[in-house]
Length: 451
Image (cartoon, rainbow, N blue to C red; front, side, top):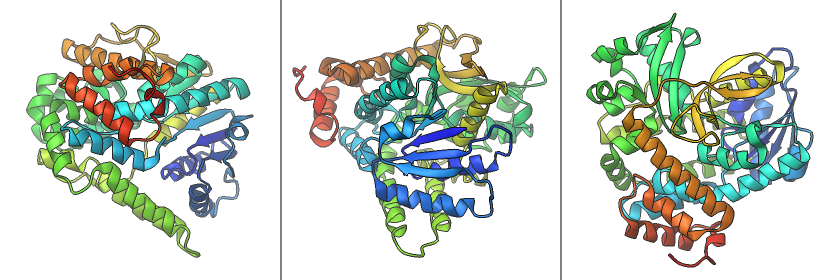
């Protein structure tokens, strides 16, 4: 099986390769093509993969290319993990928003909209090329913001593009750890949008264990989401929210924490990864050890401002191992390629699974997966409070796609102004002007009439 990774010089590619090395089953991936626009980054990651492959006689072969058409031609699966504008773009997304007093996180709020506006035109071009050069390939999208990018790509690839995220998997794993049950024997009822979903049931042998967890104060506050949201609020919701909902439920605290921090998350990662790639140019540098130490530092500091804002303490050691999304990707590839039926939480066109959203709206929910692809499972309706957030954010996503694919500046302004975390049309105008002035990649909106 042939896998192409777009963004192949990205820092997390070794996590994917680690999962491929561990896969010993028939029909496994035997050939990996890494595509990136930066040869220096490709060279650094290949050094890490080479050390990872040491001792594996049948490790998947690795080729590299900077030619997108060469990369996707003949692929069975294309894994899209690009970052348009790099981490410098992420840092700018955060800075512009925080200067105006609103959230700049890369997938949520103003920062997520700016990132989407910059990314969607590139993702759509990729989708068109794959449709032309590798029409039988399946595209697994982890490019953020994952839900809106997957929906934009689905206009050209249909159901052959599937978005993945490790947040729901991590939430389910942590909840099972608190309950003392095996995640592999558990059914998770999860629904929403990417980075905007709720775990509504944890069923073991047909019995929902979530009420037991919500009633146990010590167990509930023993893991990340319990510490972030607090037991009382989780009991009020009757569900476990995705960690990214902290930006909605505790927005003032999150913004204050981000503004008080010495660096934004994007600026921190930009500095950290710049040091890593520079170190990889030193002859004889221990590639894997350098990468793994950098990875651990990254995981320790994940969502640090949010935890500090609510005095949630440090991350648990079980969450420092990183990964998760690469295991979802591997399970997804095997289910499709080998018809190994699986149930996974994925980003797919909803087809009625999440009313009142229409059938083409990409949602994040439980799916049955086999050789025919992923089909969403229709579950219980969302409660009113969740419906309100989901429909509002989906409208924002749709306007972001419209602006990114047509150059409609009015749609871009609506996306900023109507997001639940941007509380003023005047601020929305300043956000749009600020991003156009400071962030490369949005020139296509410059020529549109000012609104």
